[in-house]
Amino acid sequence: MTETEWLQIGTLAAGGLALAGVVYAIVRWLRKVDAVFPEAAKKYGLTFTHEQRGSAFTNVAESSRLRGVADGTPIEVISTYETRGRLRIRSTLVASRAPAGLPPCTMNILRRPPAATVHLVPTGDAQFDSRHWVTSDVPAVVRAVLTPAVRTELLSCPQPELRLVVTDGHLVLSFPSTPVNEAELHGPMDVVLAVARMKAP
Amino acid sequence: MSTDAYLEQLGREHGFTLAELEANRQGALHPAQLARGTRKGLAAVVVSTVLGFLALGGGLVGAYVFYDGLGPDPSSVDLNAVYATGGAGIVLALIFFVGAGTSFVRRRARKAAFMRGRIDVVEGPMNKIYIRGRGFAGQYIFRVGGRSFHTSEKLWELLTQGAHYRLYCVADQLLSFAPGSAESGSAASGQMATKALGMLHT
Image 1 (cartoon, rainbow over the protein chains, first blue to last red):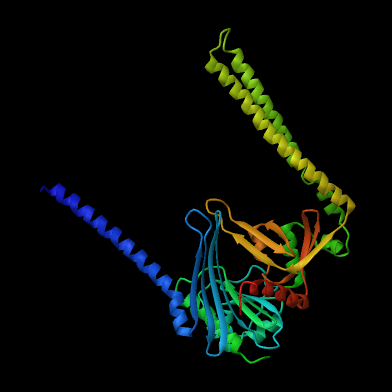
Image 2: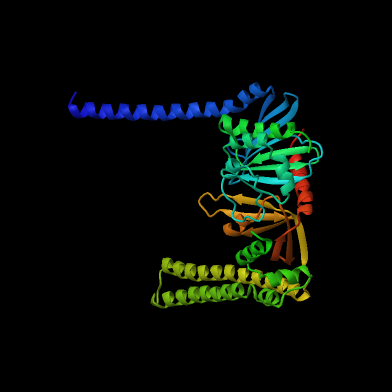
């Protein structure tokens, strides 16, 4: 074989190897993402279910759900991916029971300062306040809910924005994405468990 | 940030003044809002009508000029081109005229609503929606009390998700709005949570 032929074969082989590497990395990543919910189910002792409706030619609704009692605290996680025409909707809700006597409140926990500070609620914890900004129109409830334990759990959440809603008997933490790694799922679950286990104000 | 500074910021982005907001809170329309409301939509009607006549005139005149230059015995291909030019002008003109008609009807209804001066007060928890555009611009929407409003990114960023807001509207126009009190905020959160819990079985 001539030198040019060897070069061509070498280039093709290198290209094939690079393509195989990319395919391998994608498959590995997808398997890791698929394992996030079953692993969380094992860690927290919950039941994992997965549902899928629709096909490549119709709208799709996929949901991963964790449900059960983690160390005496009921918890439920629903992560959904939905298509409606050109729309792609991803959302995750983590819910549990709220401590008794906590008034209703919606708080937004952001990783960047809000455009308007009128609803900004500083927690007084310098380390937390330098990394997270909390907005709500019910500041007293925010201060009651964001105990040191809850703030510590919030610091480990990688989501750019979380919404925590407290209402009579329930609390729901939500974010507009589906978890793709352990931190994105365990972080919010630990926050909800920390709030659910806090002493009633 | 004081509430007044926040209201000024909201007003700057949406287009209302504190005086206008105060008038709306009293259940009245501010004269500037009335003038704006009765004027609004006129440009769309005029522009669509002018474009309709231009399309009609351009198509028909273009077709005539083309036909005139063909000589005494035009081929069927040339005649088809003449019909196509005229037809395209008429179709385009019809589209513009329908647009102008729709804008006119909408404007008349809006003008009547402004003349009646009845202000609808909508209140509830702020629900912010962002639809990321894939190949087109993203949409910034907010929803309060069952009504949705498209807005700019800047104004959308100023709003607080879940907080209680009170909106003052006439017909399909959002005149002004302001955040509500902390007490009503608690109630607002309750409404939002109840909605979210509808998806769950805890």
